Image 1 (spheres, one colour):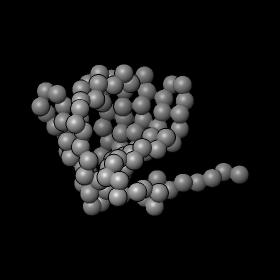
Image 2: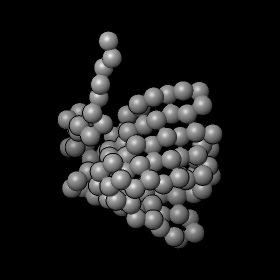
Image 3: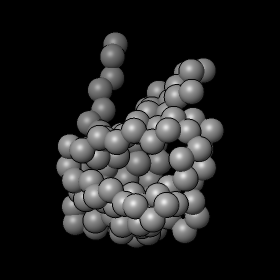
Image 4: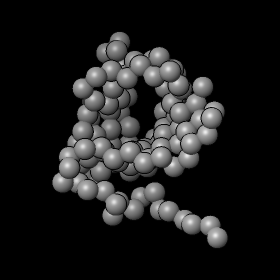
Length: 107
């Protein structure tokens, strides 16, 4: 029997912890898919990932800042490709509604 999961259902998120929530959706030797829920958090450190990242913001608003001081503002439905080792950080995420990200990491 197949089990379904609604990626926008946030009943399993403990918002009192004030931490982003990460959930593995699918892990494979060549890629991984992850759900991230953010609600006001931002990155302190720069991400310098070994993998490429493709993401879609399913809900909320967010800003990605690159180390060359350019930024991209994202809204519900926007997608973004970030090549491996392209330094970036999340400088803003909305609280209401929370950000729901679907990310795909691959070589």
